[in-house]
Image 1: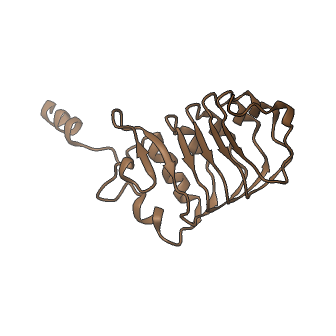
Image 2: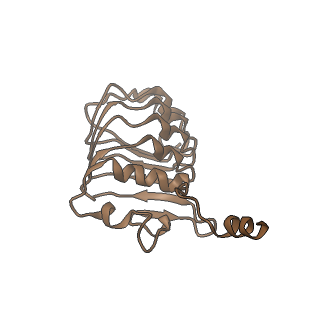
Image 3: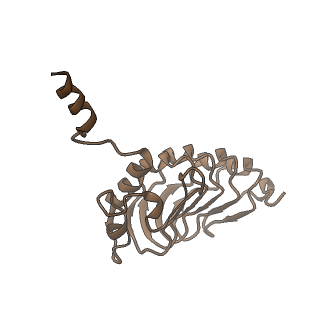
Length: 185
């Protein structure tokens, strides 16, 4: 009997293994993609492939030492869909580029947890709503591209709290309070 318990504990696998938060975040984005004309994500982003390591998925880069996702660059993949709140689980992300796609809807507030972000490119999508005020709470933000979307309102004053902000690209329809601008200071 003791042998059977040992055998079961050592050699059985759970029926539904839990996915790491990083993989869950990326798979949630893939699931929220309604069009992937080049099958960029469908072909490459899957835990069931022969290479389930997210660090080898197209558009994903990881740090050499700890193998954590540090960059997500899916620029120009011609994707249609929406951003998912699970992306806020990519806590080591420093570079986030979703430009030249057709993402719609609001930018999820959960992205405010990505405190290591240095570069964000939301350009050439169909994102709507006001520009998130939480962008100003990203202490390392250096470059922010918002141009060619359907954002409304003004640049939130919190953006100017980003002391390291060197480049801000925004649509001509967005009003900027230039008295607050200290880019490249």
